[in-house]
Amino acid sequence: MYNIDLSGKNKYYSLYKFIRGEILAGRIKAGERLPSKRAAAAELGVSAVTVQLAYEQLLAEGYIRSKERSGYFAERVAPVSATFKTAPRAQEARGAQAAAKQYKTDFVKGSIPAELFPFSVWARLMRRVLSDCGEHLLERVPCGGDDELKRAISAYLYRARGILVNPDYIIIGAGAEHLYGVIVQLIGRNTFAVENPVYGKIPSTYILNGAKVEYIPVGKSGIDLEALQKSQAAAVHISPSHQFPTGAVIPASVRSEIIRWATEGGKYVIEDEYDSEFRLLGKPLQSIYGLCPDRVIYMNTFSKSLAPSMRLGYAVLPPELYEKYYKILGGSANIVPLFEQKTLAAMLDGGYFERHISRLKNHYRAIRARLTEKFSAMDGCEIFDTGGGLHFIAKFANVNDEQLKTAAKSAGVRIKCLSDYLSEPLNGYEGCAVINYSAVSKI
Image (cartoon, rainbow, N blue to C red; front, side, top):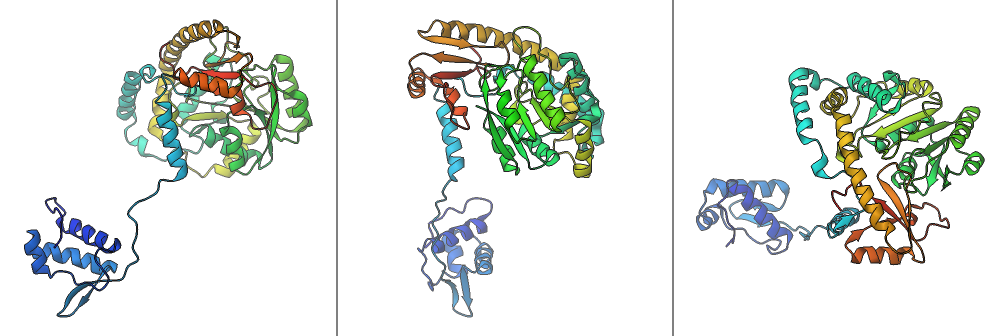
């Protein structure tokens, strides 16, 4: 009769699923009579009620029909394959993750090594927040974020970067991409000038939110000022202290011209300090926001310093955009869980975050020193490193990108080249490996 194991708890549901599968696969033909409830129960060693419940579910969903005094018969249902195809992008993402695990050294991955995350501190602070905040954690979070966290970020920015920020002007967001979308709502679906080469999520997120993007070349002094001034952009997105992926630093003279461009044209500068905590040589560079808070949106996340999975970042808005933010989004709740915001606030206020950063910097200085030594010893390799952030450029003479990647792969090393980050073609980027060592635990 039925070759099925009904030893589990939901016997009727297992029987229902089995018969449904047989009908869908065409193994029980349309019009074929099912065994009577008593016969099926005796054969399967279950109660007649179990079989009745399974038949009633099949009847309700139209897989079988009942004929008075004749029994139950299978309905005509188009056969369905039980094999489900994986979505191409999900399949591709899993393929990329599996490929990454094959490498001994990964110079592409962006998160810190797991052993460097302050698990014990984070867990202790979480318990404290649960104890101290109690029912407050269940309340609706204001649209701009938790006031305690905003005050903690403001105090941290003054200690670490020398920036004076009114906590009210800080908004908390679920990572950089979420904040980019908010910025488009504030500035409008206008043209955004974006560096080229660039981390691809920046222009793609602006475009996804309905903005236009104009790519501006990056040279040794950062973004091409002349090209920016000729653009039709209403805002420019830059990382002046350490551009990704070139590592370029914008000098003071160019910064002042960018401020003039924004001030005289009624435009905005989006200062993305994605890895500002990791200035490994010398003091942190002065921010553009500190020079012109009325035309600059200062933003950062905790992806590099804590973990990308936390999805927690912030933006400091100019007063004009702050007013607009509350007009547009003032009635919305903040999407970052209050529990995480309170825990991060406690980490910042207690000095734990700065001690964590100090530990990370010591680790990365050692990694950087060993890597630059190894790459400098290679024939025809020239290092370009400005001492900031967690990556540098290794340029190889007389080698193209494919040869470079093939050689690296054969040595168990995963890399990307500068050309991989080009949104529009540019000359002079061949043979340049981006050595991103943020995920490297040892060399």
